[in-house]
Image (cartoon, rainbow, N blue to C red; front, side, top):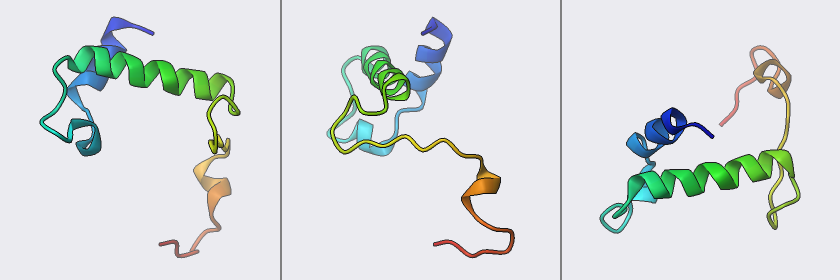
Length: 68
């Protein structure tokens, strides 16, 4: 995990991650989020009820199919 990646993620925290007035330390929060994300990507079963599906956008829906 690079400092640049952490910095970008810290600058773009999601609204739900900022709930309650944001984080006292956005970089530490971003680093924790990215570490958990990396772990789930490496070990899809690492978190309860998590599932990492690997497919391209072309495989996700047929051309012209409407999704909501």
